[in-house]
Image (cartoon, rainbow, N blue to C red):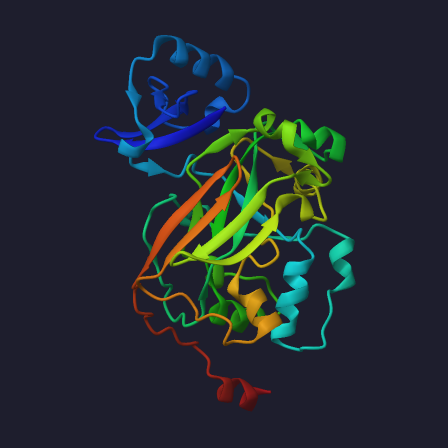
Amino acid sequence: MKIVRRNTESGPQLAVVDASGDLVDLPGERDLIPLLDGRLAAVTDAALRDRATVTPEADAELLAPLEPTTFRDFSTFPEHPAGIVKLFDPAATLNPRFWEIPTFYFSNPYAITGPVADIPVPPNCVDFDFELEVAAVVGRTGRDLTVGEAADHIAGYVVLNDFSARDVQFHEMGLQLGPAKGKDTATALGQYFVTADELAPRASGSSFDLRMDVRVNGELVGSDRLDNMAWTFPALAAYASRGTEIRPGDLLGSGTCQGGCLAELWGRHGRDFHAPLAPGDVVETSVELLGGTTNRVVAGAEARPIEPFVKASEFTAQR
């Protein structure tokens, strides 16, 4: 099934997409996460039977289908980091550690935004970028899971566009930590939460045989297939649960697909391949069966100055 969350005068409202594509409200249900651990099927069945409120999708103001409790973003498509590293050294190749662990960073759940929301350029950002991904949504609590066990903890999937301030990101990563403010302003989720059983017929290799596309101002910029992942979604869930818990509503991003962002394409083809995102640009992502996002870039806030209490010269003198 497909679940959406639409905006109403009284706040967010969950709805299930029926066979004709209309949205049938789940009465009284505003938050997807409490339904993930066993109640979703019964609630949607009752709503489809009663059909108390039905809205054409074209008439709905769609929000992100959930507000995740945590957001881990992984790197599973080897061609993506293999292209990124060429930004810094054209002769560089993929780090062999890619094949050792499904690495991830924690991103900001407060930055989650909807499939059609405007996206502000982050403060101090010149090289604004997109990242086409798919994310698994955890449906059950688990700890120290095997890969086989973890498969049963995935409730469904959403399209994800991880907007990225590349110049900010690469500057801060020079301090040998992961991305922070470079990934902190906006992450758009597709309009649909699609339950795992819906994708089962398209199972292929590491994940699912689904085409992924990203366009800027209507021009196709990148395309890939989801089953080009080198790590499976259950592997991501198992690694995320190692030594801790994953819980319903946790978001596990696939990382960017091949050709799914400008930084990778700059590394492969040069900085003239495509300009960074700027106010007025419209970024569209789409993944078969999962839907997508259409977000307009707008001007953002100016950065307020922040200075260290101790200057570099003073620190050097003290040494």
